[in-house]
Structure formats: C-alpha cells, structure tokens
Length: 520
Image (cartoon, rainbow, N blue to C red; front, side, top):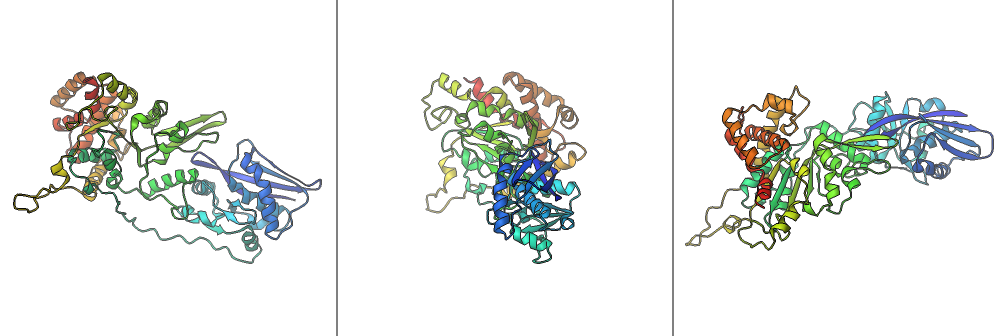
C-alpha cells in the first residue's frame, strides 16, 4: 500500500513543503527512511513504532519504506514524527487515504503517542500556507504561536489516537479559535529612567540612539551608571509593529525559545550575553545553522557589558552583521541567512583600573596599559559604533535631595521618566518613516552614501565644522558619515527640516573614544 502525507522542512527562516511517501510491501519486516534524513529523523523510527502501538494500533509487520521528497534536500527536525506515523497508519489501512488530503502534519511523538511541542512551528506554518495548504494538524502547545497566521486552519492535536479518531469520524479535533487581536497594549517596563539620578546628557544620547538605532558605546568608571542606563533603553524604544513581532517570533521559534507562557514575542528583545560567549553563539552557526544572539536581538537591543572582556576574535564577527544587517552562514550544503537589525549597546571602563579621567579617583594605570586596554577593541569595530559616550560619576547633589538650613527639602532636580523620553523617540521615528517611505530603509542609521546626498544636505558653515573635526580627530570616512547621520537624527528630534551647525556639533561630541585615543 502506498500513501502520501504533506509536511515541511526549514532552511533558515524559510521553509519548503515535503511530501512524506510511505510504501508497505511484502517481505521481511524492516523500517527504512530515505530522502536525506538527519539523525533526528532516522531515530524517529523507534518513537513512531512505540507511539502507534501504545495508541492501540498494531504496527504492520511488513517492509516499510519512507521517502521524504524532494530527496535531494536534507530533512531535519522532530516534527517529521507525526507525518511519518500518519503515513504508516494510512498505508496500513487505519486511516482512509482520501481523509488526509489537503492536510499537512507537524509534530513530535512521545512513546505513549502524545503529540509534543516542536521548534520552528511558525515559519513552517507560513511556508505551508504559501504553498497553498489551508489545514494543518500540529501540537496543541504550538497552536497559539502559529495562530499569528490568519489565513490557515489550525487543528491542535493532543495525541496520535485523537487524530486517528478524528479521521474515523469519532472524537472531534476542533479548529483553533484565535483570540481577537486588538490594539497592542503598551506594557510599562519595570525599569524606568526616572530611577537614574543626574546623567541627563547621557539620557539625551541614548534617546538619539533609540530614535534611529544608532550603535552606542558607554565609557565610564565603575559605578557611573553604565549598566543601569543600558538596561533601561528598552523602556524608550517604540512598540513593535505586527510584522516586526511576526519576524522576531519566527527567529525565536527556530531557536526553541518560545513556550506556553510566551507563544509570541511582543516586546523588543534585549539580549545581554556573557563575555565568555563563543562566536557561533553570538552570530549563529553549527552544523545545522541556528540563529545567534545578533539575530535573537533582531529589532531590539544587543547589550555587551564590559566589552574588552569579550574575546577579540568573537567581537570581530560583529562587523559583518552590523554593516549588512544580516548574518550569512555558509556550509558545504548551502548558505543560510538570518536577519540582524539590532541596536548594539556596549559598555566599558576607560582603563584596567577603571578610573582614567575620573575626577574623584586617581588612575593607577600607565599610558601603555591604557593603550593596550583600549586596543582590545579594534579600530574597524569602533568605526561601526556611531556614538562613544563618556560617563562621569554622579554628583552627590544629583543623587539625593539636599536639605536647606531650615531643614526643609530643597527643590529636587527634575528627572524625566521613560514615558516622556519614549514619546519623543516615537515622534522622531515617525518623521523618518514618512521621509523614507519611498526608500528601502526606515531609519537614519541605514542611510547609504547616495541617500545621504539626498537627505543630509549641509550648508557651508556646517561643512566647515565637519572638515575641522575630520582633520583634528583623524576620522575615517565611515565615522564622518556616521556623524552626519547622527546630525540628521538630532535634527529630527528637534523637528528641524535641515541639519544645522548645532546638530553636527552635538554629534561630534558623541565620539569620546576618538578623543581618548588622541590623548594617549
């Protein structure tokens, strides 16, 4: 007996339809799976055998051949358990052939026949939908995740026995009822900039960075507030659009980072890997390429605390993702691409002891030690970081309320909260989205040289300022362009149509590390 069942396979974020062909013939009992299956698929034979028997069916004592077509592409993933089991049961006569027509099957089987959660359900469902499949049977645990796709009917199944009963006209597996999608609620972040005393100039810089996704390096002595402010940048980022949520959820689905409690990513990611991270974990990789931290931070923030402590070889891997906004992982069997549009936020001390330039502590490092410490971050990587922000320690008067001579509390210094800052960021982003609606970019940080000539016109006085900064700071061409892009963002923050001298002057101030290098 011969049967066909539809499933799918993943290639990066893309997926392709797979036809699971099953043939039962006379001969010695054997169970073969062909069509370039990986070890996970080959091992599924024993899971499938036990699941069918423990679901109350007799496993056919025949020669069983499973072909995963097209046979020339590698198949991997535990989601092939269910379609192979359905193929065997259909060929054995437990399920009528015509009943499975039009359905696709995804799911991992346990030995007792239960259908378990799989990774990559969302991109698999999208790929099958694009191939014209309208009905998909998948694990209950993946139903909420896959419900983000409207134009396909999802049938969440708990066990292999329930599926067989459904096709036999018994117990019903009802289509999944999607929750009504209203306006997404803005969830207030527990971390708020109102908790940060002083540092108003740094908050301003982080606002500019959030407005156009400019990369930032925070440089300051221990306790100055680098990490505290970095962890609050998510609270001023605009809410994600539905398309952004869908794309980020696809990445997390493939990485296996979704759960019943978090079936969809609704807030901008904030990833903060430890400095011992490997290159593959940072940018992605492996024999079967998986997304790394730069892709898991897509449309969000990648925070690298204590940047010089990271392996220099690992940090150099960031250069291509920062430039191209995507990671391409090449293997002998082909290439896989993952998106990586993220805001890089890093922090570091200015020297080994941490107190170089600190007005309240004496630095114990020699110029050679400071130079060696800063040289852990290569010039090409620094060039790709738009803003180098030097942070000074908070003054006592800014940290606490000071009482006057009569014992009354003095007027506290006004502190802006994250909500106020976020509204200004969103206004600047809307200006950019409107300006670039006919272009292939969204933010100022993505401007190409051609687009800069169109949207970043400088007057004579501003050009003179840029020339002086270029010569005195020994800027590269890339750094020159990044300053102009920042000037465009600062102008947008102020609602100015043209870039002025004050905008470029402020952008130049955000290159503190260039000044540190010159002073050594």
